[in-house]
Each structure stands twice: as C-alpha cells, then as structure tokens.
Length: 273
Image 1 (cartoon, rainbow, N blue to C red):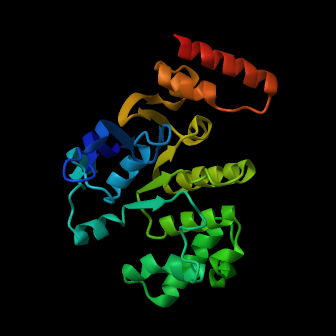
Image 2 (image 1 turned 60 degrees about the horizontal axis):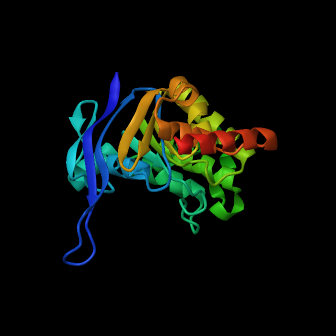
C-alpha cells in the first residue's frame, strides 16, 4: 500500500534582487513510498534531496505538483492541519549536536510532543522511559542534559523523540553522516529493528549509496532536482543503469588501496565516455 506519493513536485527559490530569476530546485519529482518500507533517496550535495524532505514536512512550499499521504493532499496545509499531520510524519535531522535543546533534560524534550497530545505527566514519563529503553538507553537518562551524551547516543535520543507519538513515516535526513562508522552501523541497525517491530516507514536521505543500500527496499537517485534512476535497492546499487549512479558508486571510497585505485581508474574511464 502506497503511504506517500509525490507527483511532479516542483520547488523554486526566489532570485536575489528585483530582477533575480527564481532558481528551480526540484524539477518535477515523482516518488512513491510504501507503508512499512524504506525508500532511500541519494544524491550529491545540492542535488535537491533534502529539499524533498523539507517539502514533505511543510518546511518549504511547493510551486507545482502534489504530495499525498494515504491519498490525502498534505501540501499547502494551514498551521492547525500541519500540526495534526505531525502525528503521522516525524523527522530525524542530520546533526545530533544541534537537534536537541542543550538547556533542557532530554526527558522534557521527549515528553513535549506527548503533552501536546494531552498526555498526563505520569503517563508521559512512563512513555519517555519506555522510549529510552527502546533505543538502548537507561530510563534514568531522562534527567540528564544533551551534553552528557555522545553523538551516537544523541541520535538515539532524536530517534526516540521521532517515535514518541507513533508516526507512520519518519523522514531521516542524513541521520548517520555525522557519526563514525561503528556508530553509524549501530544506529542503522536500530532503525531497522524499530521498523520490524513497529511497521514505520522511512524516507532515508543520504549522499552515501553504501548506507542507503544497507537500509532501503527501494532507492531513488536524484541529480539537479530530477530523479534519474529508481528501483529495488539491490538493482540500483548492484547493476545501475544511469551513468550518474555508476559515478556515485565508483567514487565511493574503500579501505583497500588496490581496490581504490581500480575504482578510481574505472571512474576516470566512466567520465571519459
């Protein structure tokens, strides 16, 4: 069942000055995300991938096309309607160091959306304790400030916050790019475990095809505001059809210097075509 549908979505930013021309960031994007699955969205910086996530969240207006959640349009909503939508759609941002209020205990941050739903303090505290344990942190961590946690732990807290009101979709915007490789794997495995247990869907935005391949059912590759390739993750990352997707794969660094040299030579041949 299709949970999220983007149809010919366009986003333009106004130009500078009275004669400035608008800059088109998304040029007619089509994307479908199935309930309970992960749709990976990959591209270089400036490709428009984060703008797609922001458009879904209502943080930027669309200039054309439509965005539907369960068949209901969610673009152009009024503030009250947008708040209601937040029950179904949440977000995990890229930087775990700036996404949490540094002056508030994390328990207060996690409880805030619960209070907005009308939960009583004791019920909210119990829910917060359960959320922390769900992401592998002790319940008494709710009394501590963000600075007392590592980057990986902060991202676990951010995931707990996104799960607080049991959304159906979480937009994950580069959620592990600021973490070391070992911590990345731990957080990715946590996301997969949560999806198996809850059935939540993810739009997973990243510049790293290896990360996207690890977590996604379907992968779309975006370049200059357009989807250039889309399909099952194993197909797109294992046998890509578009030259840009192949370039992304070939340019990804590997630890073995011999393999890295071979990949670089293949990358140069690809560009020479």
